[in-house]
Image (cartoon, rainbow, N blue to C red):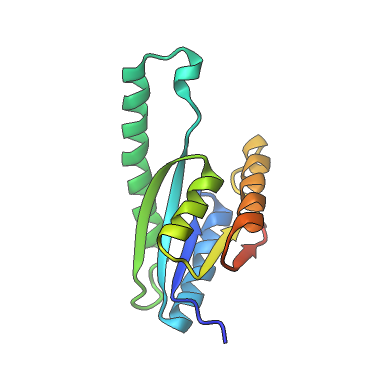
Length: 147
């Protein structure tokens, strides 16, 4: 019987990612699993847009601070389900690659991911991230359908 002990939930802070996190909380409560809540800051090279490297570094640092705050908000908002350990993490890079690296590095048993993320054009980009994760993951992936 499949009993996940380590669950990875990638988030882009969208409503659909929140739904995936709530599903992971439910699974974690059943199996006394830990959740690793991951946000990836996309490695879109801002330097390619002729920006000063100091400005790029400052933007990255501010993104990390903002992402840490948002991760804690997500945890606080949804943490009414018992005593489930949630470990937040932030990575910088290509989203699907960083999700797969996190899964490998932490020996994840299950990835719970939303089928799509943000709205508009990004919705389709995030969907392609999900597709790549599903194709390349070495562990089971639970796809939470977008609303």
